[in-house]
Each structure stands twice: as structure tokens, then as C-alpha cells.
Image 1 (cartoon, rainbow, N blue to C red):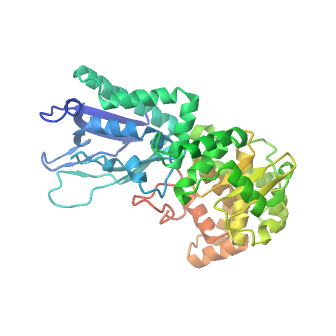
Image 2 (cartoon, rainbow, N blue to C red; image 1 turned 180 degrees about the vertical axis):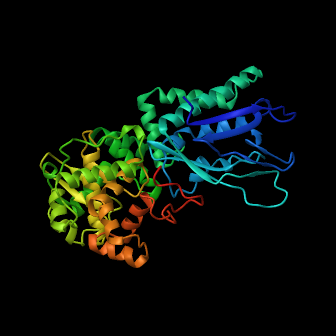
Image 3 (cartoon, rainbow, N blue to C red; image 1 turned 180 degrees about the horizontal axis):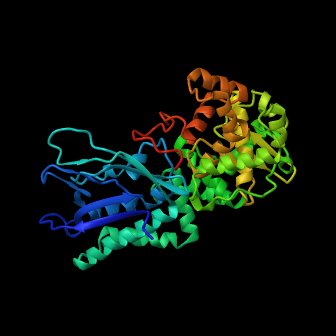
Length: 443
């Protein structure tokens, strides 16, 4: 079976530099799903190459340093985010591809930009493209590649390199459930290993015992968007002050059970959309828009939660259960369409997560779970087929506004659904990264 992606090195001689750099010098090639992300034009040799001549050792060292963040950290507004996710930041005097790698927890995106045309560029990268890997595929090839570089160092009689020390530490951490959970939390928060606030991380680890590790992971990932970290105590206070009473027992469920995640084999938007379609069919909702009263009933809450716009301004929306029959729902948005969308997200989150949990957070992060929620809410409130019937191929701003008003959702919800289904280009929906649009059908 052909590997979905491959990192390879063709070793070359280098006359100067530290021993590990000389031993690890060569042509670096990175390919995924038939796309060569390192292909370029070598101006000196005047020919195309599979990859540039670089210190492959430096690349392996960068991967090892950033392994936890590459594996777990989603797109973020943190100032140092690019240094852990953009290969071009490696430096060291070499020309590196403008290739960005980031995770949603279950899938890894690889996105490249070509080098701009300019004179006297020794190596010009040619690929503007994107690919998506499952986290398992990503980890397997990284492990194989780093092992290959370590074998090369051993063959060249280079011992006690920094790569050997760092990688041995990574493998040890991965083998310890306690350390692995800590490193994952640090990465989701946007920190390097042991560089986060010890008290905060210790508290989150403690909170995970009562709220669930999966829920606390989502709260940690929000830090990259808002810069805030919400502990269990803080969430409880917010729920008490700004929340609306709800009954977990009365929240709608899928009769078929919970949503299968399948290890990231399918993009989050598709899983969420399919779950919403199942729920609409189960409840025989038809093509009519869902009223505030109906949506509130499905969420086990009073309609006041949607129509009372006074209790606002928390940093995230969430449901917090205190028992089987009691809990609180907190909604962030000040607008009716936003609150409807957030409440629908919370319904989807409860349906999609089978593990016992007291907390169901809807954040602004780009984890798989949050993307699944958003697509669930969009399909539940504004079914794509019905939206298409309204638009009839007219995707003008005026027509999108008409559809949004009909289904009582935001125009952004309609646009995002159209992007996911390939009807319009992604445009600026993937804000924050200067890169080619990543197909929503894949990530």
C-alpha cells in the first residue's frame, strides 16, 4: 500500500559545519497525496529538483522540538505560533519551503505557497497546494523519518546530538499517560514543553478529572484565540452569574446513538452535517425554519435563553451539568442569530461526544470538535438542500442575505455551508494565514 505521505533525504557531502550538520546534509523532499511540496527550480544547476539542499538534520531537530504543538495545536492568534508550524522559520542559512503544518486534533493540514518570482533566487519553490493527513498517518511518518536521520548520524559516527536527546525525551513522554496529557495541554495552550504556567496547567489537569479530559482540552485550545484560560471554578462562577437553567435529561438525542468520529478519516464538517441530517429526519423537521421555541425545547432550556440578550459577554458558550436533571447554559453572542447558532452547537456537541462529561464547550478554536459543532449547527438550522432551493444557483450577497433571514441564521453561516459543499470559494473564511485556500471538503 502506497504511503499517504513521505519525508525523504538524498544524502550529500558537506565540507564545513558542525558534525551533525555535515552528516545530515542532503536533498529534502516532502510529498503528500501525490503533491511534492518541496519541488522547485535550482537556478545554479538550472533544473527542477524534488527538494532543496539543506541541513535535513535541522529539519528533523525542528520537528522534534515542536512535535507536541505540531500534533495537537490548531490555528492560533498567538504571536509565536508560526515558529512552531512554519518550516520557513527554521533558518540556519538554508532556503526552506513556505510550508505550514497544523492540527485540528484528528487531522493534520499541510499548506504550501510558491516562492515569488524574483531574480537571483538560488532555489524557487513551485507548489501552491494543500493536503490533509490523519493524525495517525502524520505521526507514523514523522517517527520513521526521525529514526532515519538518527541512523544516518550513527552511520557517520556522530553521537550525543541534540536531536537524539530531544527525541528520546519525546518518546519517553509519549509512553507516559500522565506526561502525555500534560504535554498535550501545553501544546493546546500554545506553550513549549515546561514553558506554561505550572499552576494553571496543574489546575486544568485537576479539572479534567471532574469535567473530562476532552472538554478541558477544548477549553485549553481557546487560549490561542482569546488568551484566556477558564478553570472549572471560573466556569462554575460564569454559569452561576450568566447562565440559564437547563435539564440535561431533556436535551434531544439521536435514537441511533452517538456520532462515530472514525479517527479523523472524514472531515469534521461532513461528520457534523451528517449528524444534523439524521436528527432532522428523526424529528421530522421538514424544510421549515426551526423556531426559537422549538430549538430551546430541543436543548432542554427555556426560550428566554435565546430571547433574553442581557446575560452576555462570557468568553465562550458552554453547557455545564450539575446533575442528570439540572445544569446551566451560557451563551456568548449578543445577537439572536448568534445565540441560536451557539445553542445548536451545544446540542450537536452533546450528541457527538459519547464520553461522560459535565462540560460541553463551544469555543472559537479550530479543533475537530469545534468544527464538527459548527457544521452540525449550520445543517440543523439551515439545511443545505433547502438553502440551495432558495438560492437556485444565485450566490450574490443579496440572495445570501435572503436565505439567512429566512432560516434565522447569519449570512456567514450560509456562506460557510456553501464553501463546505464546494459551491463558492473559501475566500477569507480561513483568516489569519497568508496561504492558498484549503479545501473545506478535506479539512
